[in-house]
Image 1 (cartoon, rainbow, N blue to C red):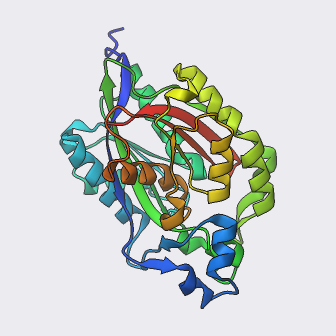
Image 2 (image 1 turned 120 degrees about the vertical axis):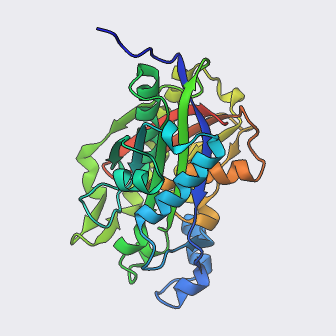
Length: 317
């Protein structure tokens, strides 16, 4: 058997992002449901979010973010041999997003599949991409998190419509002599699947207090284990970029990491909760603002419906 040579490691070569142009403020929502800017900010920390129009799809946003990541990587579409799209809000079950997105980006005949691990989806997909590169199954992988949560919301339900939003983030993963993506630490708690689910096959529903307790008490050990498996001390972290679920959740987990020097992503404030898009979107925006120089050590932590969770350490391109 003549195996394709495996790579010693894998790393992220570039990030890309896309946000819809339509900004929806808390004041805008207060005109539609019984809420206020103070009520929303005190509970979830959001000031505004981006919502697409009817003419912009999950695939459209994935193409926009993926195209930016590909351009930033310096690679051509012919260099990509695997495309993974993490999403839980695709308009149709079949066909998948990844094959269509690849074709629109000019990527010819790549491996292509979607991942639905809800808000942990990007971390799951990045872990698979890293393993594929290291095993020799792929050379360069385009990983995209893209969500259009607005089309699955009951806009009369203030417990959900004030939280969720739309957007996409992407990363290109390639081989590296020195590993730039640590081992993924992932898991699930399927006995609590009823805490976040799609109601009547059209509306997203979540038990907010139960989810808050789970995230703030049970997930920081997952993050610490990812640091341990990557051989990184909390004091070495440049940034902590968890899923942007809720500002109170983000800050509660950050406090328990023992890494006060680390920049904590707070993209939730202006982007809302974009599920699997939130981590790459936040990372791309932080890099764009100059907050994360090349080689920064970042801890990511995704968590959401399923219940699923995943954490890994990566170095920025």
